Image (cartoon, rainbow, N blue to C red):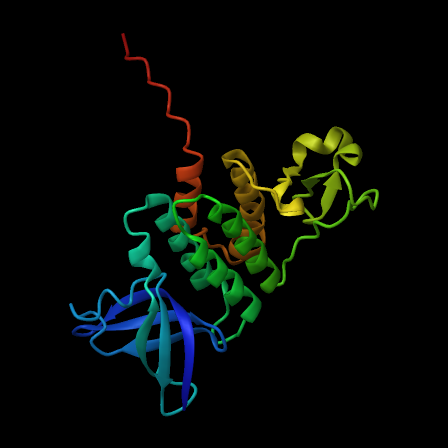
Length: 249
């Protein structure tokens, strides 16, 4: 059994002396694991970093075996953003979500395209943050939990959409929200019209997708979201510092 494909390194773990078990997200074969002989060596360690895009060859005696994996670089995205904390956090969050949420060996070419678009967009310009939020929306849809953001679930209107129901994932127009507005999730404008968002809109987008990632993917299997995803949100919206405690008299 053998295939040749391209893919992103999602995660890696040590196996024996100098080898690695690597999870990759490939275009035609989905999330797929393989044993990389010598992957932990000084010569190869830089190649098998999460976020890197590689040309991969997998080989095994039968389809059920772990198999061996070899790779050549296409683009080392992890090295590109190594000195950019926010971009690195975004790349690691995307890889961690794919590793945690996608079924093994189940191809998702649309999600792969969204991942590639995000990785290629990373740079000094923060426009990539909008691509990151859209990536999470695609991930939800590919996992079977797509949000209905094109029309109001209450009135059927396609204009003035401002909220999303935290229960159904359907959009709600501002005129139809009424007293329920404080209980609804904000729907940032850039997800509707493609405009360039500010940081506040990005945070609203991440809170929107994060709610459904937690509710429909992680809470369902009693698992927390990946720490890398939480770290990205903390960088964009740092938690308020705790008030100092008053010393006892």
